[in-house]
Image (cartoon, rainbow, N blue to C red; front, side, top):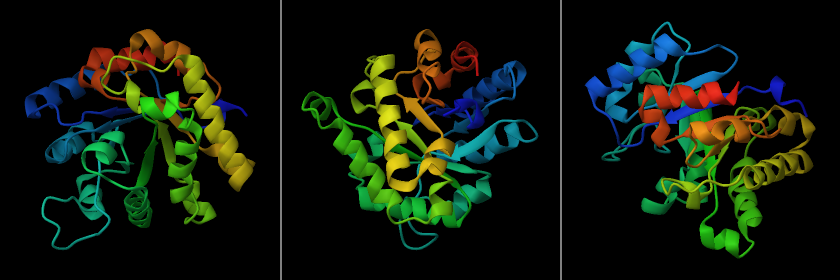
Length: 255
């Protein structure tokens, strides 16, 4: 499979970080230094910053994502964010099922599936996060964990809906810990995901799906990871909070 025919993505997940002034400074640096247009750069700021970020990146190649959403369009769900609100704020992507949402807020595979269904209905592209814990990997259950997370979503979707999803593999033990899966470990899991898509739903879906790596991605490991055939870009956490660091990930990848 030729990865050059798939979209490469660099998604900056700011998590619960940055204020208005910091966001303006960060985007100013990114807009002035983006090295090319052969890839897609997506920013996922906190909800309150989304309208500001949308205005700042207007007319540029930068794209906007939500960090999360709820499974309903509106209603008595205090504190939740609707896909309609994301859309109104200018988002065309939304991260779903991040390990922090699954772990800290007890989100289930069923809830993740419901969110993806409603996002697709609103023409927002889901970035589906999957990943295993350190204990699951050490017990050699990491492949089965990923298979269950994927099948719980994909089995209920149509062919056209499946084709719209971006997958982000994020080993939970390598998020915010300073640890990183080796390029071999990451490549092995990405290949497993693509092979599973091919055997379950066909080569067309497997060939066309962008699969990103997330987990302490930075300048020093971006090149080696991105060189792997089945790694199509990165979901970046800490390194996305500084324009210089985020741009270095993109440059070093040689996308």
